[in-house]
Image 1 (cartoon, one colour):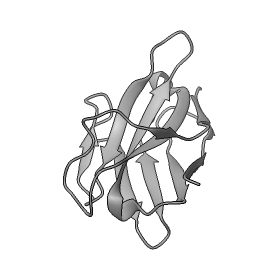
Image 2: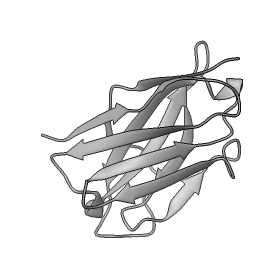
Image 3: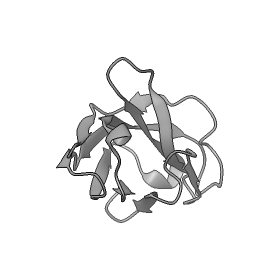
Image 4: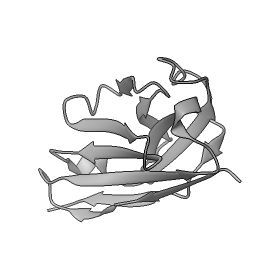
Length: 125
């Protein structure tokens, strides 16, 4: 059974850092793209970052230069390192995945099929 479990959220001050983890089970990252999305209260869900099965990263303009996505194939886990956090980064963060192909450079542009339960990130003074 394919499953994604997010962790690492919490409360942090502006300018601080958090590292989110997305632990995958029931499949291997070698064949799947993984994306991070977020949804703030009263707002639509938005894409934050994505990494292809081959490790090619993509970022939303709002987080470029502050967030870094990475894959640990041995641990079957995707990380989102978030630095220089701002209050507007406050949201529930979700990871999601879709099957692509073995270690490809694409796959972040289409709809994602499987989602985790989310982890709350709150940035406040």
